[in-house]
Image (cartoon, rainbow, N blue to C red; front, side, top):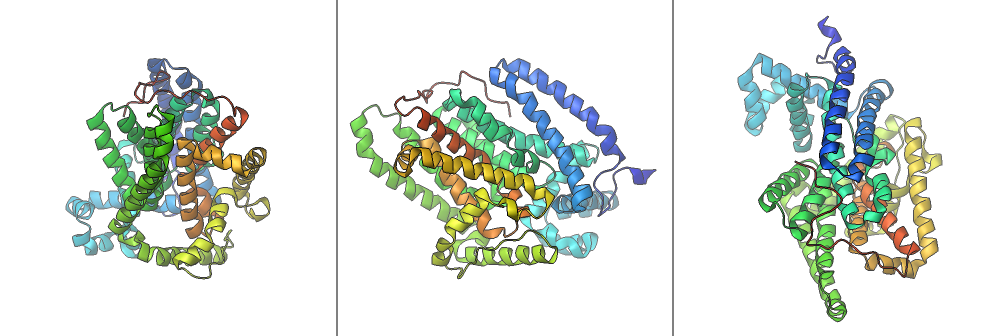
Length: 469
C-alpha cells in the first residue's frame, strides 16, 4: 500500500496522493483567491486574478503529466528525487541531515555517503538551494509533488502579477495588453510551473522589479521593501546570477530616466539627457562588473569558457538523444567573437525555433509563439519606420528598460543554451518584458500626437493596492 504513495523513486513523481489531494487544494486556493479579490475591491483583480491563477494551477498539472509520461524524466525528477533522499536522511540520522543542510562544505563526504555517486548535482549551489526549497515544501504539503509544484507556480504567478500591476499603474489604458504579456503567455504559464529553477527566478525577478520601483518612486514601507529586495536579490544571485547581470544595468537606466520625467523644464531635460545617459551607462557597467567579479563562475574572464562548456555539453547531449540542438557557429570565444554572434543569439532566443525546426510536438507551441513574436516585431517596425521606431524607444524609459533587459538576457540564454527544449524554458523571464515593450510601442505608434498622461510618480496607485507579502 505504501508504494501507492510518494516514495523515493527515480522514475516516478506522481502517486496516488497527488490524485487525491490536488482537487482539494485547488478548491482551497480558489476560495482563498476569491476572498483576496473581494478584499482588494479592484476591477483588475476581479477581471484577471482568479482566471490567471487557475490557469497557472492547470498548467502545473499539465507540466507534471508531460514530465511523467512524455519526458519520463528531467530536472524536475532530479530535484524531487534528491528531496526524497534528504527526507530519508532525516529519518535515518537527523544529525547528518542538519550537518549536510548547514555545513555542506565540511560534510561533503557525509553527503556523498548518503546520496551516492550522483551527489555532484547536489553540490551545485543553485541546484542545492532548489532542492532544499523542495524539501521545505515537502513537509508543508504532505510530500506531494503536485502540491509542491503549486507552491512553485504560485510564487511565479506572484512575480508576474507584480509586474502586471506595476505597469498597469503607469499605463492604465493598456491593462488588457499587459495581462496578455504577464499573465497569459503560453510559454510562461507552462514553463513557469513545476519544481524547477525557472518559476523561482521569474517570481523573484517580478518582485524585484515591483519593490525597487516602489522604493525609489513612492518611498512607502521603506524598511520592509529593502529587506524584500535583498532577499530576492540574493535568491537570484545564487540560482541564476546571469539574470541579475542582465537586469541591473537595464534597471539603472530606467530609474535615472524616470527621475528625469519629474523635471518640469523642457530645456533642462534636454540639457541633462546626455549627462543622464552617461551616468546611467556608467552605473549599469559598474553594477555589471561588480556582480560579475563577485561571482567567480560568471566573471568576464571565465564567461567565454563557461558558455563554451555549457554549449558543448548541451549540444552533444541533444545530438545523442536526437534532441533539438542548434549552433551559432561561434568562431572564437573572445569578446569580439561573441559580439559577432550577438544578433544570432538574440534572434534565436526571441524568435526561434522556427516552425520547420520544431522536430518534436512539445516544441510546436514555442515555434508558434516565436512566429507571433517575430510577426508583431516586424509589423511594428514596418509601420513606424526605423527612425521613428528608434525615437519611440529613446523617448520612453519603460520601453528602454524592457528592451535592454530582454536583449541582454536573450543573448545570455541564446548564447549558452544550444538546445531549443532548454531555451524555451530558460527564456521565460524575458518574455513578459519584451511583450510589454512591444505593446507600449504599438500604443505610441497609434497615437503619435497624443501624450498619454502617466500617473504622477509621487502618488499612490489608485487602481489597486499592492499584494501583501
